[in-house]
Image (cartoon, rainbow, N blue to C red):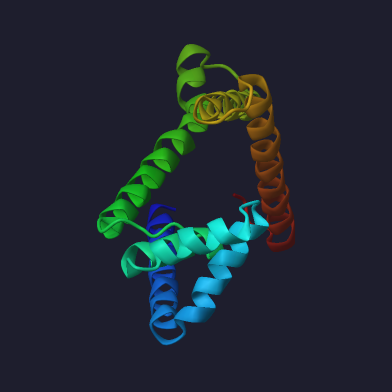
Length: 185
């Protein structure tokens, strides 16, 4: 998952930079059209035509700045910082650590519970792993709410519901494959 996040982030940044090059080319070869597009955008957002022309004509005197503004206003794309490759690596590392940590927590039901209750049947271990998974998903959602405007309970419930649905689908597929192949998981 970490490698996937790194590659996805890197590919997105490379795509944004290629779009930026295209916008630079368009500004160099067809400045009137690019300037008019920006004027139209500002007028559409409520600025009167004369003010929009004045603002855009002033900004267009600074091509690098103007291209970045075009990226944000026209394409809704944020140009990545110079350190975007390092940022992609950080994102990949965070994703890896998150999956390693949160992915191992449900296994605690199979490790800690048998130590505390050695005579529990296997079905009880599975149930405890499901309970630990549900708690972890809810807590992850609550933590996620600290970085958004969503209420902690709603965020926790949403994460629990979606994560639980994904886990259920994975379990059902595993059971189906086991039945079809006769292999024990």
